[in-house]
Length: 259
Length: 217
Image (cartoon, rainbow over all chains, first blue to last red; front, side, top):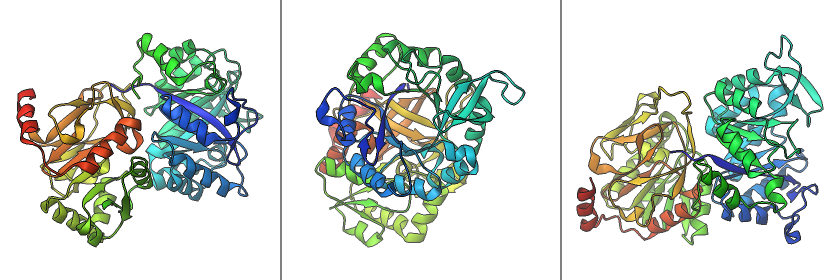
């Protein structure tokens, strides 16, 4: 039986960990490769790196960073941030990223999803969507709207519709990131996660809001997610990946416990 | 030297990096002549069977693989490399290399909660022993990402199955060829250990494995 996945998210800027993340082990500040290796050994099933300051100027730094990570970890990892073309995606893939995440650029030009999917395969094309709860309108019947630029720009697009469109265009997985839940540590947006997981035929990754191991359990059991993304809950040393997995296992969720 | 076949199918760099991590020297090559000189060969691949077969035929790599297989060189197929060694693939109705009798088929589920592709970590159940599967425990999980899987015509070519909406075949073998549907290069410690076993494998299946195999089946 397929295991539910625990995915650790690291924010990087010019090949270094973003300053907003303060690690308990201060030696590791600034070295995301060492941190990635640590999570790999601690049983993370997958890693995702968001290049939060991606621009054309520092793209080469990002590629070097991806190569360095690929030489150190032997589980899948994806890279997101600033991917605007097939060329961006192909380069990341060749540098060693298993998957690439597209977000705002796909909202602005949805064909980007099919172009990348054709070039590197649906299994390597992840559509990451930032979602905010809103009031129901004719355009947004689900109450959930797609937003971009860290939630500062509303797009008027319905989240469920966008998820289905993403699947049709060739995305192999969806990251559903709730802007409302993000950073609250109050748990994932379960209604949203479940609505999307139940309306598409591709795996859904719940993102935003994990503060306790119970939240991960809920993402799987109630939110119907295939994977759960965590960040600060492990970055600040509150829990190790192993502890989170042991907890999930004790609650009857099938996870990979031997690594 | 261990040769990793480059036929334009996916990210083979990750296979080489995994070899390097375990101390195995390797070369990536698109050249059929290099395969004929290699001591052992990894046949990786991600992507679609029709394109892969087209490339294998056009480059002469397909013929070279058949030759080295006949010569007894140990070969490890990974993912698409475990599919195109059969007679044919349902994906685009593609004739394949035919090193093992059988065909590659697509997952078909009534249950819509089973998503395709099958992406993630899954355990494997060994159906008969093989030197490359030695030491694998039923709790050890491997990373999969695929919509198709190999279905050998003969049970004796099936070495392990995995459960996704029922058992499907995830490891096949015949003589000096062994192939897995999962990605050892992305499967953490247990995957790396499999690559190490491959680097030591002489391409033979010991008689005691065969015998034990019969008892298990």
